[in-house]
Each structure stands twice: as C-alpha cells, then as structure tokens.
Image (cartoon, rainbow, N blue to C red; front, side):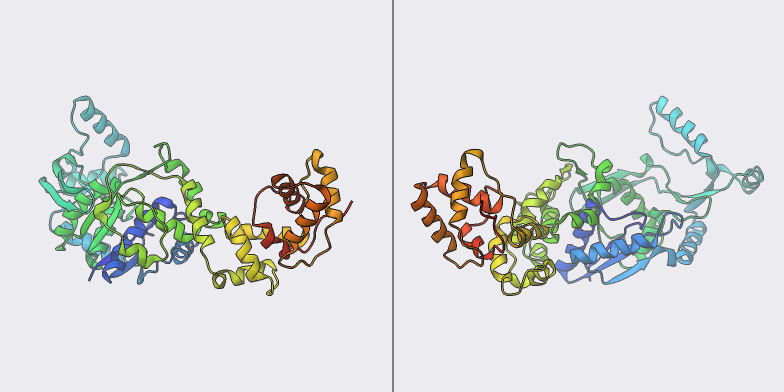
Length: 441
C-alpha cells in the first residue's frame, strides 16, 4: 500500500508553501487508494504549541485533506533513544564537542583554502579520556551520524536521477547537546517504522534526503521513493519567505478565498498542465502527475486565487448557499431569486451582504448634476415597492415617454439612481428584489 505523510512543525500556522507539500502527498495517496499520515514534528517543546496543532488540523480539514491517522514525534522519544543506541553500537554515531564558534572558524579556514566547508571528523580521533576531559571543562557533547563516504543515488519523482557525493556533505548532527532529537534523525526513524513509501517535499531538502537514505539503510530499513518540488517565489521572482506570514491558510480563508480555488491552483502551479478550476478533490487527484512538474522556482501570485474563487462561487447551486443566505437575513421567499441575481456579480460569498443591504436598505443615489432634473422627474413616476417582474420595463417606458430620453442616456442615470453604481445585475431582475428606493424630490 502507498503510504505518504505530511510532517509539519506546530510552531506556527500553515502557509501556502506548506500546502503544496501537504497536497502533493495527499494526492499521491488518494490516487492510489493509499494512506495519508499527519505527523506532527513536535520535539521542540519550547516552540511547539497546541494552538498550532489545532490550527494545522483545522486548515487541513477545511481543505478536505483528511488524514488516516495522526502521529506525534513527542510520543516516540523512547524509540529515538533505542535507535540512537543501535547506531552507536554499529559505529555510526559519534560524540562531538566543538562549540559553534570553533565550527565557524573551521568553515572559514576551509573556504579560504578553497575547500568545501565540510566537518573534518576531528571528534572521531577522541578517546574516552579526551572526552572526559572535555566534559570536565564544561563542554556538552552532541551526536553526529557518520556517513559512508560514497555516492548516494536515487531516482527522484520530479528531478530525475540524483547523485550526491557523501564526502561533500558534513556528517549531520542528529542529537543536540541538550538531548533534543533533530528532524533528520526523528524523521528517518518514523519513515522507516511507519512504512512510508513516498515522500514529496521542497527541493531545499535534497541534501537531507541523501543523508536520510543512508540513515534509514543503517537502521535496516528501505528508503521511500522521494520527489522534490520546486520552491515558490513571489510574482516577480522574489523570495517568498518574508511574505509567508501574510499567506497563511487561515488568513486566505478569512479573506474569502474558496478552498477549491486554492487546491486547483496549487495542484497545477509549476507543472506543464494549465491551471483549471476543478469540481472536487477526486477530479484533482485524477489529473495529478508528478512527472509534469519542473525543478525551476515557481512564481506564486495570490491575486491568481480570485478569478478561480469567482468562478467557483458563481457556479454554486442554490442548495450550497441557502444557509449562508439565511444567515445574512434574506427571507426564504426572496432567497432563490436573490441568489440568481447576485451570483454573477460577486467574487466572494462575503460580497452577498453588500448586495442584500442595497436591496433591503436602498442605496445612496449617484446622480450627475446634468441628470438631476431628469432623475427627479423619473422618480416621480416610480411607484413604491414591492415590484413585479415587469417593473423596470414599465418604469423606463413611462420615463421615456415623459422625457424623450432613450438608450444609455435613459437607462444609466436610472440604474445609478437606484443602485448608486454604474454596473451590476440586470435591472429587470434586480428591481423585484428592491425593498426601498430613493425618496421622491
């Protein structure tokens, strides 16, 4: 069975970049009838918060990316300790004592010599006595994984064949001096134990993938199939990282972005397939193909969400919005006709409130000075509400006969007098919904 996972850290709310990873992994599982695991990387006790756990679940639930089970890394610390002991016994873990300052000096020296800034494995030369002396000096040991210095190769689901020389990569730190298990190790143990078969994540993790392949093999496991999607940039190619705080899923939802607009865009953005509004997740999954995605940075513009949101909203049947119309306060006998009229003139469902206020309370007339006398004469010919289906035609015919105006010179000033706008629904359909009109002069 295909098993994928989405492994966010509950240290903040999900943003548009997180969604891309979650969606790709979800779609792979959905398309193959597999399982999708939500795994919370919450080993950082100081920064992980339950409010963010709840926020992550709420966002995924809103999107319809329903998980088959939830795992928490904070509940698996004993397992990480067990596997760390196994790797120590196998000679793959070794203790180091360099301070951050000392490591920085080593990197600078290597760079000055034209060498790659790779950890020199000096700690491997320490014997037990030397380690005890360092501890006596107050130094705390942290643990690195000893890489086999060979080429690490895999066929990436997006990038194709990848080959990384492990000798060009520092032995990764997997356990900090304070005992905190780091992502690279915890994730490797989890992926092995949970039978994860496919992983899609950002291409900033390619080096991590190389080291994790060796870690999983050292523990006796089989690495999953990996794919690395491109990173998102802003619409001008600028780094998106500084704007991610304003692109949280909860904020986009609050702004009125529809989930199918968001999912439809993110399932195709950066691929060779055109972005098209999908009806549901089944349709998105059926057309999803990792091979269609490229490695180049992908431009994301939040403004692209609005045409898709508009198309989705305008296609909704009355049954999907009836409750929303009732919340706004639209009477049941008017609601179906109101939806038919308003739907083609909104982008967000929240826009319905503006149109109902116009119908219920009337609008501030927009009257050009040169039309003031004409509008006053026209309003004198307008009977009070309620109006029937021929009210607009009857009124404009009467005004035309009385004033001699016709065409745009007749209709536009009357529209603006009743709605305060020069655009909007067909007035013949809108007029029966008007509960109040401007007072006669």
